[in-house]
Image (cartoon, rainbow, N blue to C red; front, side, top):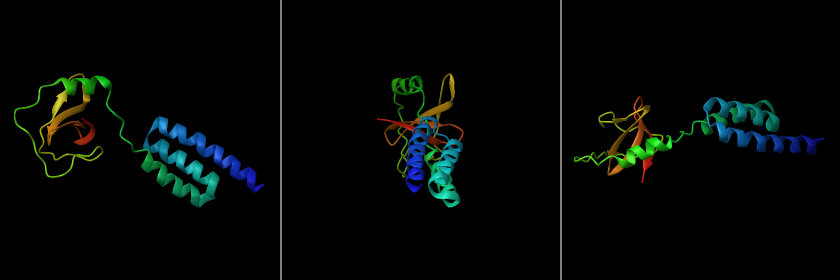
Length: 132
């Protein structure tokens, strides 16, 4: 009986893992993690799985290709903005950095910081992508 439960749990983990990657949202990650944790570890597993799934579900979706292309094609500004902190996807840049909106894509703006073009969420100043 125990082997059957373990086999069902392994199948559930595999199938839920792929759907969690496809949807990448906190709610989906938390729900999938909780279900998987409950199958494998009961109530305690559900709690731990929900927390881990929520953390994994907060991955930032990359911007559409047309946003990346637009930012790549824009001329570099004459003045360079330098900040002390490293520029990291998922972390905000300082509010003092002036952002340039991306036309037709109000969810994205960009700036050139530390000689790197970065696409950010203009509401939160969170870095969405760094263009190399």
